[in-house]
Amino acid sequence: MQPVNAPHPETWLKVTPSGLWCEPGGFFIDPTRAVDRAIISHGHSDHARPGHAHVLATRETLAIMTQRMGEGRAGVSQQALGFGEAIGMNGVRVWLRPAGHVLGSAQVCMEWRGSRAVVSGDYKRRPDPTAAAFEPEPCDVFVTEATFALPVFRHPPAAAEIARLLRSVALFPERTHVVGCYSLGKCQRLIALLRLAGWDAPIHLHGAHVALCRVYEALGVPLGELRAATVAKKDELKGAIVLAPPSAIADRWARRLAEPVVCNASGWMRVRQRAKQGGIELPLVISDHADWDELLATADDVQAPEIWVTHGREDALIHALGQRGIRGRALHLVGRGEEDEGEPPAEAAAP
Ligand SMILES: [Zn+2]
Image (cartoon, rainbow, N blue to C red; front, side, top):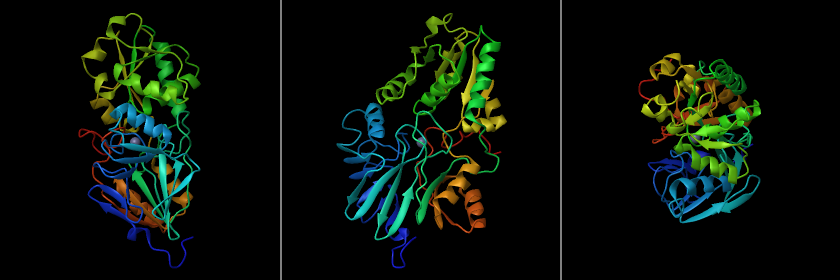
């Protein structure tokens, strides 16, 4: 697709200490430090940092950033760009396509002088009632994550994992099921999946999860009845489902609930040892990142002759891409994988 004289994306999309820099456009994508002009793929803190002068993102990502960082810190000026709209930035055409990762998550698509690059941010291909589905954009260079880029990572259907949770709740009606999940994306997706599975009772939230659920609802994602989970309501929480940050499920807060069944929802729960070490009684393999098959299917779908890997297990992916005739390149971007499932905690040995 690239015209004969089109510049290779590596001549205009560069890795700098601040992150990916579109030189002719004069902007960074998901920069790791405060910059003048940033395009932000989604609201996780390893992609969306505070203090940029000008931020371009989807309306949803801007709202999430503002909630998390406060007015002003989420860009002195903000510019919303909807899916299907395009703008010119110093001669670079820029548009966003859904990434299917969390609400508002977008791939950043750029074209300069007939040469096209797409930076996916984080993405998944599974259906998610809280995020617009990933749309492949054919390009000359596709920039991908590789969080779960090993053949051992094949995520089961999320509905089957939710069914396991609900079976356990039915089996232990006197106990409280407390599910560890990150506050942006995973929490709201679990709620939506529970509602789809017919769970219409109130869902209880650790205080850390309340604010972003309200943002989702304000942006048009219905979550049903949500209640604050406080240890004072221990009896009310018998038979209930409580969502809490992963850091809270192992500490005193969770232990004071009624005979808690400690669950955790993460792609890393595929690694049994990891679940065991974390004291997880019911591991749920639910991920907001592409698994091995999804990474390779996406490589086929975007038809890019070259794929750059930002972070994760790049070696296995680059090897598999090479077998498909696709040139792979590891970018070694720093500062990624600090939120969501980006990186296994230190104790999680690779399988
Ligand atoms: Zn993310």
